[in-house]
Image (tube, rainbow, N blue to C red; front, side, top):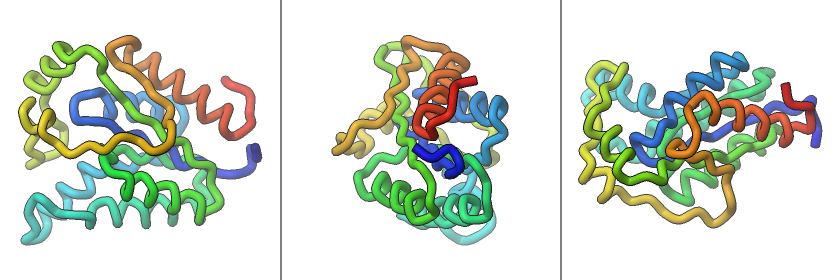
Length: 180
């Protein structure tokens, strides 16, 4: 691996699994650039006549912003989104590879359905105007099985801070550098 290359870290998973919490902890510890698709999509909705479902526009902006950051020399870009489809996973990978970056794909899960439901039913958002999904909407959401193996972090087994440390070690390994 080449430690001089940048890294695109794509953190995905169903709503309520802990993606944003882990992403914030990782970014705070590493200084990585942070792209959050919920923020991009809600900004589009707040500033235009667009409505949910937006289709691919938020993700397309995310891919372009990630590639631009990596090409401009940003060492690490963390993109956080549900990333539910093979087509979105491939597009993130293509954006990173085309930018000369190592791509680290991460799936955040909560293996305890009772805890996952509790989180969904009791959470709030820091994005003005964002409507959070119900437990039923999370259950009904289209979410394709992976066709390659991502790094899996289980927030039913580890705290967000522990997951951020595990993620950092995986990024370091992928970049061929010693863990901090």
